Amino acid sequence: MSRLIRKISALAILLGTASAYAATTQIQVLSATVKDQKIAGATVILQKNGTQSVGTTSDERGSADMPIDVANDSGTLLIVKKAGYSDLVVKCPCGGAQLCIEPRDEKP
Image 1 (spheres, rainbow, N blue to C red):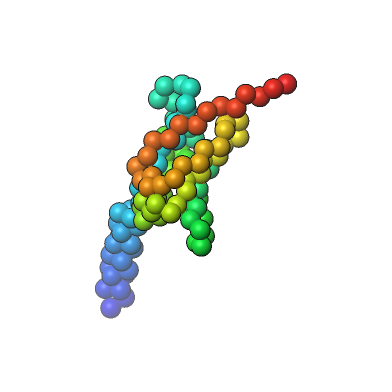
Image 2: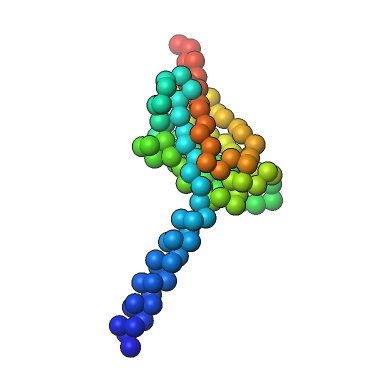
């Protein structure tokens, strides 16, 4: 019996992972000044009035996985922040977007 429960639990975990993956979209953060340069470590936030913001950090490929239902809602804003770069605010739908952020001019 416990062997059957373990198999069912493993299947439930796999199905949960698959459904979570299917419900996300990838947003890519790139440099606005260097062609094809991916920006890692950028904070990517989806913000919709009346709901809790959803946020993550872009990985070494500049990619951030976000919930597709929130990213494709026209009432959502996408905010990208990174130290040394200008903040970017975009009105959604933004699922699958490639967004470019620009370095800030740092004055001595």
